Length: 467
Ligand code: PMP
Image 1 (cartoon, rainbow, N blue to C red):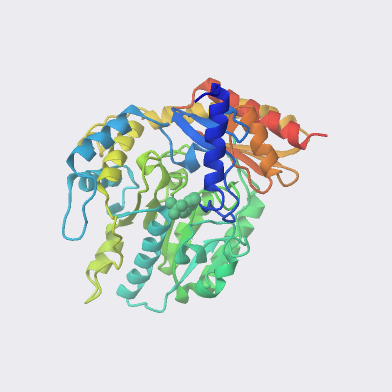
Image 2 (tube, helix red, strand yellow):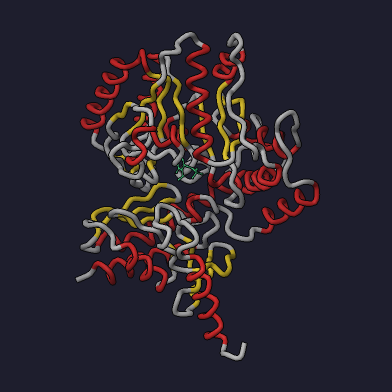
């Protein structure tokens, strides 16, 4: 403390970054990779980062902590919900016991989900909710007298999580999971539907001929393999970690028809897209499709704690319930229905819907735009405006905006480390991959912060990839 403030900051940051490297694994990284910045604080849509040189950076979080932090950091309502529940009890086992936070959350989820979804399994992470969805589909087929239906149909370019069954339905050539191929079941993959652009007027623009060819190919593959298929799993409308790829909602309608025709369950993985991110509360609603099973996570607790949910229709649950001697859904994690996470999720859903108790937003509730609708519409307008200059950059191949997601695709792979650092210097936290620089900011980002994100990305791309 004899040094000046800048010196102290430098020592603190160096200490943290040095202590981290070689000790902690980070996602998809060698153990000695370490981190680029230490987070010293977070408020609203902003992170306070310290770099190794001792410099502080106040940046807008363009990632919303991987889609999750929709209401911003240190949100007073979420903080209050957490404190109130801690005063009661933070955790209790869910076997044989229940509690108000889990019940209230499940009631709210059922009230806002596509109408056919009536039952809720509270999982502890997105990947686990996918595992539970796949297990349920297999158990459903067995209950229906078709135990041979043990494979899943998935889309190329998809991503559903890092656990073994979830990995098996991820894009097989992506390489993220190829080391584990021997332990992953061999699933069946459909090509991606053609890319679509969601225009500012709400229209979907895509090549109809390509789409029709895709649809008939999909029908053919499904028909040939129906006898061995339990279900179809898909990230509706927007594939996230597999490449930030937007495709026509009509593809979901085609998959729904295929599922109905062949007795397959349609599983919507809304872990990234759920809770308004794409401009609909759930992305399946772009196609007015009801899935048989839906997985949600990430933004469920407004990014505060790890919680996910698997919802299923009454038809699926009843088939399982009627199964002779095999009616139990075979999953049960220790932290299932964690009360603290559930209490925060309830508060988060209230912020999204503007509703109070569950009774206020069921069928018959007054029709007014919910807070999430206004927020995501504003994000979409802001991102269309602030990312527009990127369209004129020679390094940029395409710019796409869907709801609260903005994607800039370059002509070449991004120089990730340099671009990340340049963006931080310009006031934005992003995590580019492949040829993509993209943002999905917190819903409460101001217009000024959206502008700052756009300016930072354009500036960083020019600086790193220019000339
Ligand atoms: N599905 C999708 C579409 C995802 O984006 C993710 C997370 N990136 C997952 C599943 C896995 O969720 P989690 O990381 O919480 O296990």
